[in-house]
Length: 259
Image (cartoon, rainbow, N blue to C red; front, top):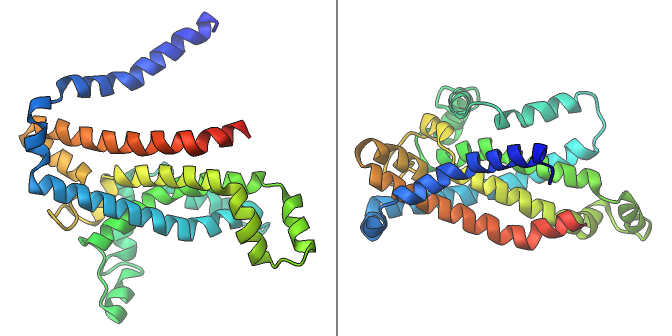
């Protein structure tokens, strides 16, 4: 590699890896069993895994059709819609939480009707955590899957249609298998983003142990009173994210790149 590229590449790698190395060096390895066996920690970890998984499932159900529409539908304003639905990628998470409050809060644009008609209140509840995580994580899946829809060989879909397959059958039997690697990759990115969500969650759902206190919120609280516990909890999130991303990268992302 030429040195004009090697030097910034090395600096970039050092910049990204140094914080992780610092975390590992400062980790209270001898005290990990005690810290991680705490009931509050286990409750926060369980809640994080459940909410991140639920947010990913909702993102798949809603995001895949939306990604298909963004990739295939040709109507006026579709570019503006694409910009709006991917806005949470760059929107500060706290702002996203405030927006959710004004939309889905008890007096919000939609939330007032949910409360009045169905008695459903989302803020400061576990479903509220899932909603907040879905809001910030779904765009990761949409962008990944939309790109896959654009790259699908339309000739295969047309061939299936000429053989008598309905549009739904073509989508289910031809299109989805073709985009499967990208769908899984986008789902993993979505899940990892939901697992680490902090700003929108604490703003929209609060920080109640056992109800809305996820691992990132637990880390934030521990950092103020017990830095060693905060490091230990951070290691758990780091380990979970690395295991999922590394495992699925070998199985799905490499074949995508190779193709």
